[in-house]
Image (cartoon, rainbow, N blue to C red; front, side, top):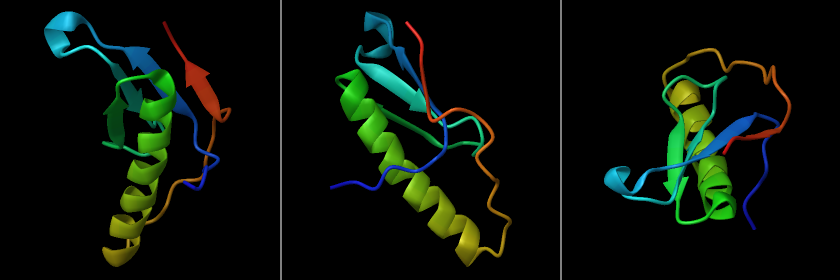
Length: 76
């Protein structure tokens, strides 16, 4: 089971021109983005992206931003 982080995840649909499915962005972590076929899959994939983002930041000695927004933002 994927760990759920306290960071807000913005999930939005992608147009057919963009390939369809959903994109998930983590506003508190610059460049932390994922996608999925469903909103739930995009959210789950974003949790994996958050883990990778944090791991990379730690390896580089960078500060990990504190979660500043509600846990889930889902836009249509």
